[in-house]
Image (cartoon, rainbow, N blue to C red; front, side, top):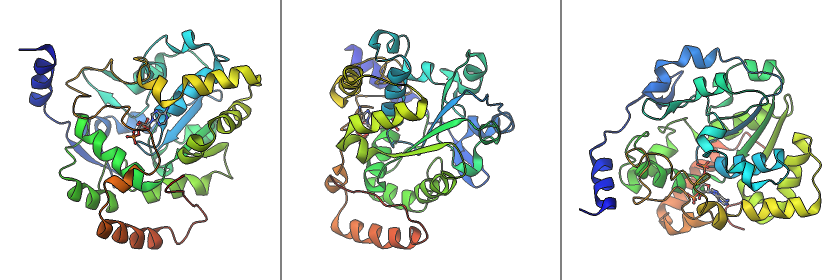
Length: 302
Ligand code: A3P
């Protein structure tokens, strides 16, 4: 049997991680089991937190932020895979690691990751006035990306068919809850706290401009050449080839890239290849209702 066939077999046999609810939000059960510890997590004032709804461009932002901190030094950014460089505070896969333990063991200044909605964020992050970067992505592409990610990632539930997933997503019955509540919750908090709110679509349209914004927020002054280097090294094509940024170092029983690669398409508007006309109409109607109470707007194509 060829090596990749063996890997696929191992992956097929691996059961999915079960899920449960924390405060009404669906989470992988291992996260629920240590929820008290997550809630009591002690942030430090110099922690930098990258917060997103899953599949909004977290990994991309992490890579950019790391390169900003290291003034464009690509070799330093290749010191370890993404999930080791940036502890994911509520994440625990017994065979891979525990974000909480990783964070506790990491010397400051730490860059941490979360997908938690603002209401479930451990209070110490806001009490300590940590800098927080939030990235939001238009919900249609976000949904498509999440669907394919759940197909390939055994640490999340089986998404079912696209039609089934479409309904689960709209109902907020996916891990980390409703997309609408997530983006609105963080949007409402941004002016009272130290939060930089960015959009995936802006990063695609003008990466250099968004990288400059990030550098300014972090407090780093970078010259033009370094900014250009960061744009280059964090482009989709370069990151897709970078084993320290494309999640290929995780065991294939957890993430099976032959089902769908982690670095899948990296575009704006891929939803048009998935949504039927009827689904698009249904989505738009639902979106109008759920987003009627916010000033937040999204671009669905560039
Ligand atoms: P697609 O599935 O649409 O391709 P996250 O890191 O939050 O899990 O988000 C993953 C999504 O961001 C995937 O979207 C992935 O391809 C995309 N992505 C990752 N790196 C990117 C980059 N450098 N440029 C554009 N998109 C990127």
